[in-house]
Image (cartoon, rainbow, N blue to C red; front, side, top):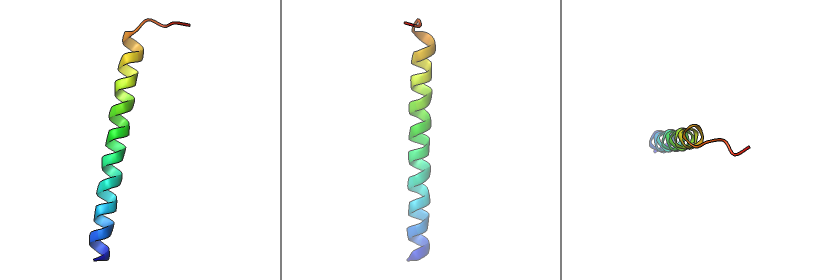
Length: 38
């Protein structure tokens, strides 16, 4: 059971890391496409 729990935790962490990376890529694309307001 412990091994299964660890695998689930690792999979969840990888999924959240991928989600954060996708969010960062999306916001970076928006920043570069829109003109700077400063």
